[in-house]
Length: 379
Image (tube, rainbow, N blue to C red; front, side, top):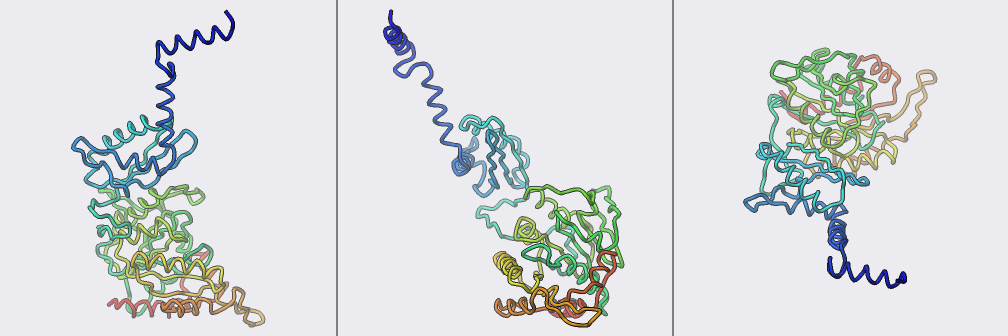
């Protein structure tokens, strides 16, 4: 029998036993079906289409927070409601099985959080209810910037101290939400760890009558916090709700730079009185300051004003003035955007020395504190 004749015989036997396409046909068809669910959009649709025994959707589309595809690994981040917590495992099992049957991923991982309140018409920017820890705080103010390195943390700490030393004797706290680069412990000159009560509440540390909370009190100062969005959101929520802030006139929140998860979480979980934007005068910083203002406006947080930091430099030797980063850019931007201009802070070596040594405050911040008090009508 020739090779051709032998091949023809094998093909005919395959057709007789397995049909026209041979034994491998079902596997090829299954592989083709799985290839239809290989990109993020199709996988998201697959998860959103899953229903429970009653025929109702397991999840709303916006509860699928993110999908990360890396080779043969798929990581699914879901955000369930408090009402879904008792059936968390069954939700994961159902979706995992659907993914196993319809995708070719060998490793499927889940990260499930429960920060969302159930709602028939979810709004991604909606306020999600007040947390117990901040129920006695009169005014919560976010100090933010569009980018790092403009002196946001320096401004937040010195502004808080200026408020606390005002003639009215206000009760003030500082919440350091800069998860990746907490500066408050160093600037306030305190490094001890806070006490955690039997009911899992955190007692904030105090320095000069100011209550303090920072991730820097809880982690090794040299450790890098390599956290994804849900972990950042959880940390911000815990520092708001699980800290016994007590009665405060002002809680100043030092935000991380940018416009991300921490900012959105804070706006959803805390009734913000407003945001203060810190920028240096040059155009490259003002571009990002503009983005920060646009973000807070989008989530309905009032802009209390812009501060121009590193506005100029007065030489202590020749007493000449140098405008190293230009000058007046933040004032012009405030006028352009229709928001208050709160003041200028110079590039002063004393501010840097005091912050590094854990000492505050400088007189530059007193006038800004007075404007904040008058704007917010705290008595």
